[in-house]
Amino acid sequence: MSINALAATIAARKTADPASSWTAALLAKGPEKCAEKFGEEAVEAIIEAVKGDRARLTAEAADVIYHLLVMCAARDVTLAEIEAELARRDGTSGLAEKAARTP
Image 1 (tube, rainbow, N blue to C red):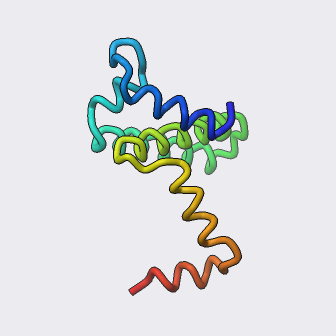
Image 2: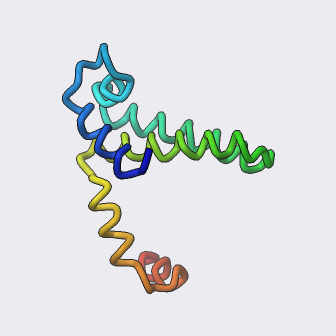
């Protein structure tokens, strides 16, 4: 499944019955719960990265991407908006971009 297809599925599940969909159930719990779940998955990915288990890191990275998109959907931030922000940054040095955000 592509990231675009995943984002579309998540968007479609926003109106689904929480009893029939894990995504709908998670979204029904609100943005805070979605953010908490994203954080848990991010920590699990970090642990697997440190351990060096490529297969587990791959699985956890997929979970991180899914939960990131769910968290964003809970706040009505779309993948298209994220892509637009990445496009805006294209061609800008990561160091320059970070410096511009630092007060």
